[in-house]
Amino acid sequence: MILDKLSNANSYFGLHERIAAALQYLQQHDWTTPPPGKIVIQGDQIYALVQDNTTKPRQEGVWEAHRRYIDVQLVASGVEEMGYANVDTLTIQKPYDAKDDYELFTGNGSYVTVPTGSFAIFFPQDGHIPGLAVHDEPASVRKVVVKVAV
Image (cartoon, rainbow, N blue to C red; front, side, top):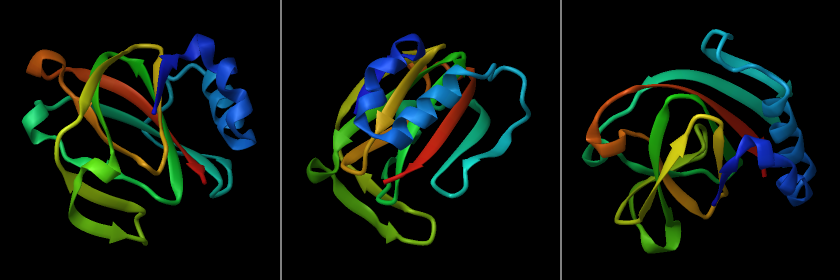
């Protein structure tokens, strides 16, 4: 897992060319105006999902992980809490669904606050719970999740 401000994204361009492309795309756009939905960046190799969400209490969160895609999650407006745990420390709740590329888990992990202008990168080994309310106080969040093929 990586957590940083979008203004520091160039520090991560060396990880992989598709991660660099995703971060550059995020840097080059104003994410407060496009309508929610899918934006194709590089076919099924890189695409963005623009979302308007209301954060939820921590107890409603579910651990998830993906195998075919890395998640680059940018909080464009608002603030949310995200959970993180290595999948090796979690218990499978729902086995991997290859069609929709997700697996669900139960367990414990760490939590971080992700403010406007910050992003988190979750790799296949990174179990995560996105969309949590800071201090369990639901709030509106505009988020862009860029799916980057592994």
